Length: 312
Ligand code: BDR
Ligand code: CA
Image (cartoon, rainbow, N blue to C red; front, side, top):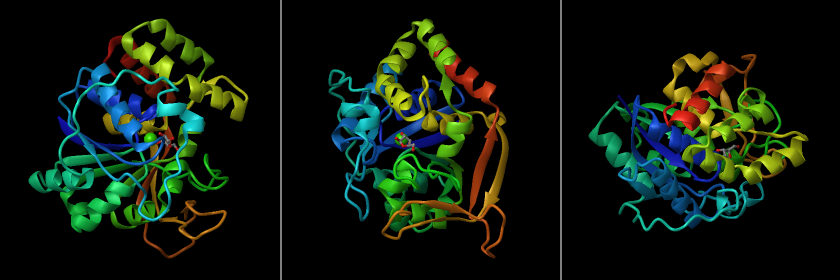
């Protein structure tokens, strides 16, 4: 089965993506590496460990990575996820120790040991991955695939008016990663257009009454409230789970295309914006594969199976 490292700013939907990967038979999660993003760094570390406990997968090592973006100050989003990042619910400490190495070093060491075998699934800001690239310039040749949840393809952001959160938190890192690695992007807009769970789906999940469903319902409460305020409806997006589902189940993707992508690093209103040359008007070679459409039913079935049977 495939081997993955998940780079995550664990809160909310990151937890669900980790759960999905840990429960799936078709992949082996080698490690989690934590990056500054959604909430205060130490909360993220604890959230990741708690999620592994829910998944009965505490043998997966948790490496602490970058506590700050490369250049910017760390701006988190606990207005979205609630204090602590799991819906404002602070769970009991797990007592699980972190692995004794920086996340970026762990990535480099593991891909060097197994060239071409490890897939990186990046569901937070890209600071650790950019650092790993600077430690190991041949990272692109050493990894199998790189999947990134990030950016908002030529559309509105979810953090600033123009930027998606993961790219906004560390635009310099996002720029380096998109430029230097062959990435597949699962962007914010896709998760809004097609990955959104409506009230009916949420009720179905709740009715499953498993420990996974209870976990989901508890930790997504604040995010659902946020969606109600922002979009005027009962729903929740699951960008990180959607990215993970794409890794697990290629049949989920109904269309993807290669484009030239550039991340705006300039100060100002468009900092962190992901510009995609969809019409091929620049002469730049495509540098990213972008997932454009998915089969929503496949995604919802995977998620429901995970909630109901603990098997996505
Ligand atoms: C991304 O930002 C975070 O809040 C989510 O976990 C996801 O990775 C969506 O923009
Ligand atoms: Ca995330």
